[in-house]
Picture 1 (tube, rainbow, N blue to C red):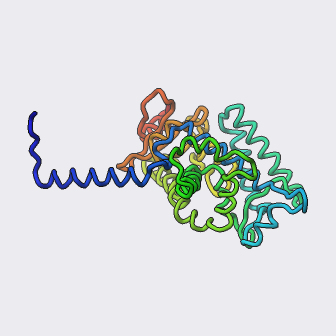
Picture 2: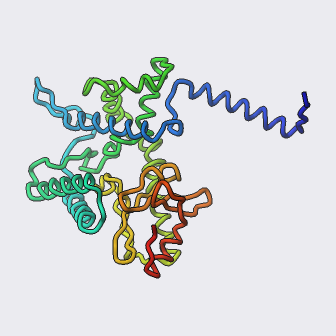
Picture 3: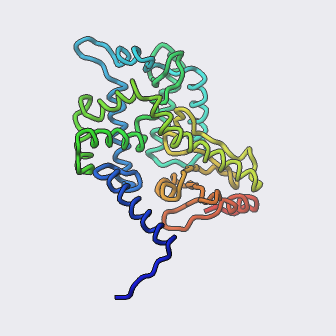
Length: 316
């Protein structure tokens, strides 16, 4: 057997690597890890999370007639109608998307339904066609983001796994969301809303949602820096934006047509979330931006957008 000679520095590095791997394996043993979940597994968590979220949001006790606000308001939280400015801004954005963007049949149906409810809410201010979670003084609550945030759900599930010493996280995931309003998922989500929402806001959402907003700003700045016209860029993402909730963060105008844009923090997420007849953008480690038009094609630098739009060529 051939002997391998290592220098002192190489030996130290190897020992550190082994220790770190052992620590990581012990720490994550039995738990869910975001990077180890497939795209389909993440999407399933989102869908199940949305169902549980709606159960809590629409809950009404059959015996007493009390709705969820009976419990929420004790902790400075409520489900109520958003302010007029929120409704008007969303009506404008949804109307723009319906009139100008290429949309799949499903997305068009979703946005049209959203527009109908938004307009009904404006016309009937005393009704509850559109309700959101609000903090005191009717301030928009971070709880509105709790439905399909995979990082949040992984955190809640892992707390259960650790508490109950569960070894098979994937098997446990099959039952976690079962049971409706009495499920472990509903219990954990309500607790997160009532007691831990400010902690989750600091630890999770400033990194995911806040980090996403920063990526969007950087993408816009880079486009403008490369010579793209500011008037040909619209951003939809924000607190509870209905277009954003349908997978469209922004839109760019090229050759007289508006193109849907999804903006993601990494290549893997970008390639799996390309909007219908649109592009999905992501930053590299060197802070350059690239975009996908199709999963089967390599990504392109966003300088291609600026150059092609300037001379009348398609970007995809």
